[in-house]
Image: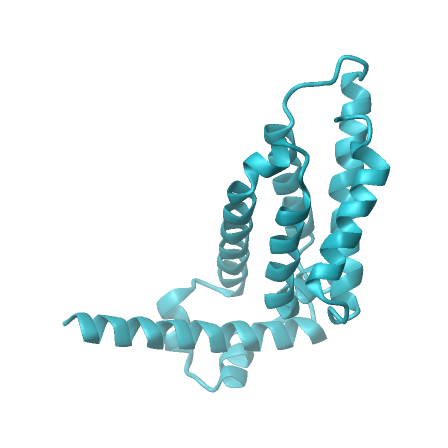
Length: 194
């Protein structure tokens, strides 16, 4: 029985992967509201009934893909919470850039004009919430407004760097990008926090 369940799980994962690949391909060409279940399943070479076993519609599928990505991102950030509190951002950035590299096709389409603008806003909020949680106390010489601007700089700067890197097909190694992001963050915002 366990073997059957594992085999079924593998089939489900494979089916969802094929649907995700097809959605990614279609999002390169058109906006999500222009994609039909029929064209998605035709491209994935499966019937519509299979799609409806897992998703209500295209929006539901996209939301579940994004939820899965954000769950993984939160796990990465939680793993490095203590390091980040000590202002050691490189390990977190390294895992973040490796995650982006592994998911570059989906990240690219989600950040593209055909993607989901809510994904970008949600990405900013996740990073911001984690930053606020990790660095809850203001240094004596810093106002709350100044602190907020620094976090905005880190969040939008990092997201912009990710967007540029993904649009270049992640040509530079993830390690190199983590080093660059860490250096930029340190030069531009963390100097006065330590």
